[in-house]
Image (cartoon, rainbow, N blue to C red):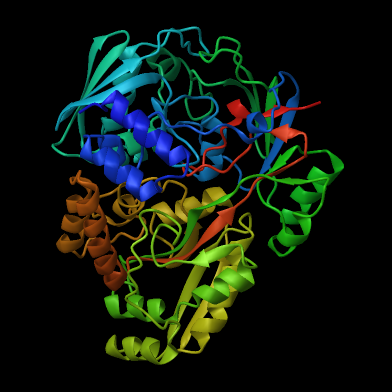
Length: 536
């Protein structure tokens, strides 16, 4: 299926002029066979950056020091091991396609694409991209990337996002075919979320966990553990004139106040988060800039369902009934989050509004559920990361809440690497985490985290073939209306089974100096620094 050019242009013009809304646009494009729209995304419709809209011209040069929250642990994009790692290496690698702020798709290493039939996609590739080891990018690199992901010997966690991909066929250096299971509705979204292209020689010559080599706007220079990572501009980048920055330095600063102080003193030029209780005040400060934000970050409670007490669905449902989502949004997030029982926020086009636990928190119903499980009192532990400031606070709030229904919760603290080990070895009982890949709420979140056998199923949930079937039903449906209905059905079942519990979806805003441009929060949660420049 390909877009019919004249009709498509007319609909896009009406959308830009405000004559039709997003839902009408998607419906119109679906009628003319735009499978990209069926995925909730429209190929090729991009945004003009705020700087360009203000009549400013990007300038080259300068160093930007960015203060993120967590410490990176692994630079191999096959594993996506902690969001903090992704924030760095997504600037070292390129994907075939990219998600824009408005939810549309834009070209990356693929300059165009089309669906040939219900199992085949064709991608035309750029011919001027080079890896940082001076290997030229070709279709062979695309095939190697996804063959490597599928290799069971590697055990790549990211393979879960592209399991319906059966093979990649190289037609030429600049053309590849993706062969998938029939009617996989999530290919483009998966490529935009985790599709970093790697090079065989680079992988085999160096340790990819420590030495990332891609075609991206910045090349890796050094990683001083527990201090900083330095990237420099790749002068052979395939996009003319980009990136604008000479150098990019990432530092992991766990404390919100310390990050803010560093921004105000000039030590940092970009920071990920300020003290939440000061957001309204700081937005009025002319010496700081709050860049365009968005609610793309779900916060989740993971429950270890492989052992008591959370192997019992009634105990998990008691947790659902006890959930004080509004209190979490207001007390922990200081109003910088919205309650949500699902992966996306109420403002998202996918949002279903299913609420199996309407009226929660309801402590009486929570106690009923515990009694159904044969439990009067219960001792549990909550694994938190002090590097993520909201986690200990959420733990303390839940500690007080659960005490009222007879659950005594101990809050434990772990450094990021140790916390991840607790997660993967299933030693934990309960923990909280944010999730940073939600372009597709099922293919990127519910599926990986809840489907039995998934490498990302940290809850260990494998008790429901019905849930697996509901996830598959969504994934292998193309029609947008059918996908919306399938998603709502899946959310109802998922809430009832509660292998994990969604708390809130928080509003992520990036803060910079006023002379830093091109910064914005993206639905893919990438820090796309190739667009960033400094007006010295």
